[in-house]
Amino acid sequence: MTRYREFHRRSIEAPEDFWRDEARRIHWETPFETVLDRSNPPFARWFVGGRTNLCHNAVDRHLAERAQQNALVYVSTETGIERRYTYAELYAEINRMAAVMRSLGVKRGDRVLIYLPMIPEAVFAMLACARLGAIHSVVFGGFAAPSLAARIDDATPALIVTADAGARGGKVIDYTPLVDEALARAKHKPPHVLRIDRQLAPERLNASYLVDYEPLREQFFDAHVPCEWLESNEPSYVLYTSGTTGRPKGVVRDVGGYAVALAASMEYIYEGRAGDTMFTASDIGWVVGHSYIIYAPLIAGLTTVMYEGTPIRPDGGIWWRLVEQHRINLMFTAPTGLRVLKKQDPALLKKYNLSSLRTLFLAGEPLDEPTASWISDALGKPIVDNYWQTETGWPMLAIQRGVEALPAKLGSPGVPVYGYDLTLRNEQTGEVCAAGEKGVITLGYPLPPGCMSTVWGDDRRFVSTYWSSVPDQQLYSTFDWGIQDDDGYVTILGRTDDVINVAGHRLGTREIEEAISSHKAVAEVAVVGVADPLKGQVALAFVVLRDADRYAADKARLKLEAELVSTVDRQLGAIARPARVHFVAMLPKTRSGKLLRRAIAALAEGRDPGDLPTIEDASALQQVRDALAAAAGGKT
Ligand code: ATP
Ligand code: MG
Image (cartoon, rainbow, N blue to C red; front, top):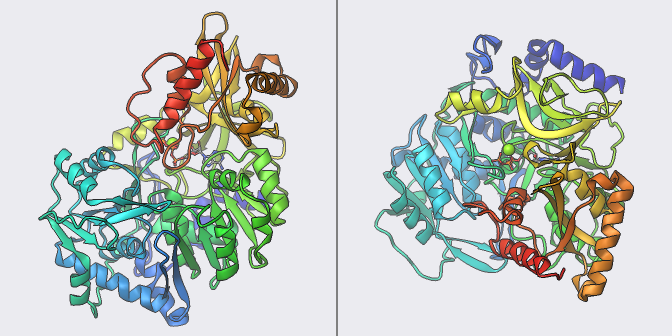
């Protein structure tokens, strides 16, 4: 562990020296004067006075050496379209898009709201914004009109870029009516709406405000738009958090710090080298998409694979087919995707030649042990769980194989990443927890480069939300709860508001979920705490079975419930025992695949779960309601 320990220590004890060295990875049009400005904590400014541009670093800079290398490989199993763009072609497309945006009045500092499905034009639009110094605000294409309207009003864009339609699982989703409704709801009226016409929408809706991209692209086909050289701390984008626990926060990212942090992470965490191919199965609407579909792989000179489609269409082998076809070296996804694949025919994994693949990265939610062991055995490659947030932009916890290939420990995303002064703290006293003691995961000041610089338009909210929960200390709270072992490995126990208190014992819902999911009948589980007059709170479990038919009979379910309860007893003790286990076909999740435990708890306590604009499938709530009603009626 010495190499990792030394590396991490240096990054914390001498951050200026550490990050000055890392800053050499990117192009600075004007060198920075100061590595770190700490004059106004908790705000931190990195590489002050330096001028650079994200688009230049992601694209222009590579033209000398890799103009003919693929920069972007696009595959859609929804439309059957596959396209490849070399760095030279990507450069040309971005310039066309930038010229079109400029012709519509977009200039440095303006916001551009990007509401697009997974199409190459989304990449062009984001990088065109970067080129112009405009601030992109990408809104996940699956969001409905009210979520879109809220983001329009928060970011007040000068332009919206959208498409006629998206597609998911073979279903076409018309975007124009959604944009129409959002614009009607929003107070802010953007002067222009640019539409990428995929010719997918069944009806050709033609709202008067829509400007079609294609004719403008033709008009600016040979355009060259110079990069705006931005001061390192100017904003590059606004991105809203997933909204799992409340009103989404508009996370603001800088330019220089983000570029440096991503470039360094490609070596130390992802071990991606120029010329490699990376496939990040996420969406451009999430932070993983921003950082590891677009910016990081391109900044480091890789080929990035962008995929529109689900992991199970045309069949559960599609991701592995992509690996074989495109000789993918690095793959990155969320555990939720793997849990979907785990229910598929295991032969699909063996059907393809996966020899190009070096490592599989996972982030976004806890990686449960059964899923981790399954994929690790099936692939025979290192699986690297990494823990981070929209706010940080890149991992806080990971095995940093490019620094030292420490062994993985099942259930833990690893050790603190360089640059992060990460400690676990007692929630009440703010004291550092001893090894094995549960606490809130916090970060010391300053946050490393690439992390959020503030909440969009609301510096006070940045301070009051993130920096005020530990009394008398300058600490950033992740609002996640964890436990650290003697070797420094952290296990995430859940979000601080998912902690339940049973007869005075504080338990992370994650601990109970882990125990239950170790039973082979269980595909997925959510545990929530509900009020109990006797014990304060009790745990309720909601379980999705791998093979529900096997447990169709009431008797079989009762027997399984007893088995699951005794599994928890054995692993955690009777105190953690769920009061009931309910069986459902589906759990309520956000569009980004995270469990909405609060909504489940509200239903279980007979409360209204409130507005859930980020929910993936609202019928999952009905399932929970039905299960609760059936149990109240004496059935399981
Ligand atoms: P909101 O903050 O609006 O409630 P959110 O927290 O779901 O939404 P994200 O920033 O997308 O929005 O998610 C970050 C959170 O996801 C982390 O704080 C953590 O709870 C969880 N998470 C991410 N990666 C991991 C991981 N590897 N293991 C466990 N949990 C993870
Ligand atoms: Mg969060």
